[in-house]
Length: 207
Image (cartoon, rainbow, N blue to C red):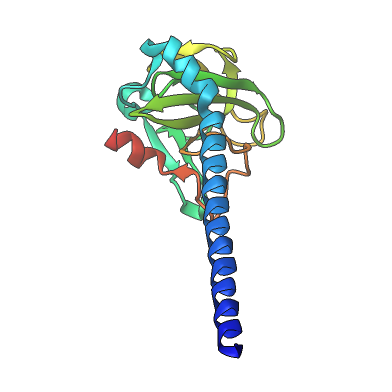
């Protein structure tokens, strides 16, 4: 009799453990589904925008100055030099010689923001690009003038701004960032942590 009771206890424990395991697997599966659904919903707006405006899906990329190959400019502070999160494009004559020079869109895209955000950033344009099924963002900072508006679709090579100095904070140059996380805040421009940021020159050369 004792042996039978012992057997029943073991069977009962096995059933309880199995139920808990199944429940845990189900919960994990549900959590994964929720996260996947949330990720998809984040991009839903841009999926819809580019589906309706397919002519503005990116095909390839050029440099933002001296188009298409940055002729007459040099990269004064490269990606991750001094933990820099972008590239600083300066005219070859240095100083403020390039102030007012043209800044061009590096690819087809959608203008998500175009405004003066103050501080060391000054006038900033943020453009969303859909490219090979993925989303990227290009950020153009310290602009003297802005020539596009939020909500506008633009083509690669379009004049979008002019080179500035953030109201005299710097010598004139264009700070360019390319991000593969399009939902980040503007950030600080410098960091050892490069998650979400790409090397702009490398990305443009490869694409």
